[in-house]
Length: 54
Image (cartoon, rainbow, N blue to C red; front, side, top):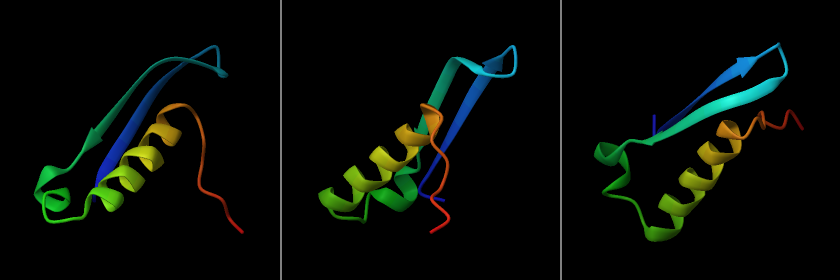
């Protein structure tokens, strides 16, 4: 995995905290562009966005 995102939810619908972690073992060998893509993707999850199924 290039990164992970975790969130804590209160009352079933309110995100009260979140954490994004990036895996340097994987990302150190990637381009700056790829690092930015992974960071943006994981921060999206931390703010409550899911994967697009389309």
